[in-house]
Length: 196
Image (cartoon, rainbow, N blue to C red; front, side, top):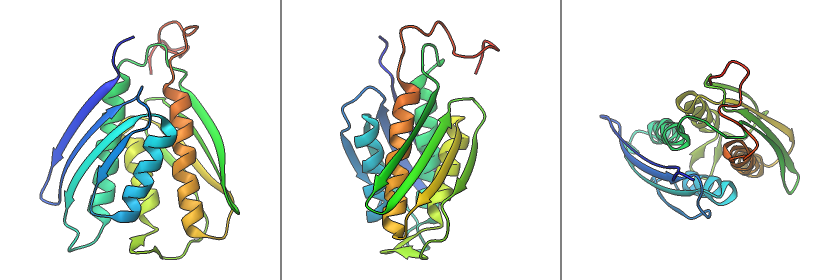
């Protein structure tokens, strides 16, 4: 099996980001973005996606967290696309519902080559700690677009915004893990078109 590992570096006037990922890792994470709650969520992706993830981001946090979170999503999506390669033998689809106390979030995704986010997380408090909850959709939209993933996220229940967000990241991780898993029965690219 080829190593499904990738590194991405992206530098703009707003952020300087380096990401490395191993899709076939053990769930090890080493994340530093300067945004504590966001680091905690990226840790969830690594741990529950069983991928090793290293993130270093220096962003314009003196303005706000927006550029840091969105640009990290772009880089993560690029790294996912690079690591999975030509998509030969992948399962392609992943779907899971994850509970966290009263919250229950469903994530379904398709490594389709068509980046799209459809999200319904309902109303949330404006901030969890210092983290703007609006940035959850911005992050997932950036990942989906850069990785070429059709991504659906839906809150099925939940009153605590922290729980809803964390359940969403965990569900994304588990769905992604299922979708990138190599299946020895899949011959070539899993598409009737012959390409993804």
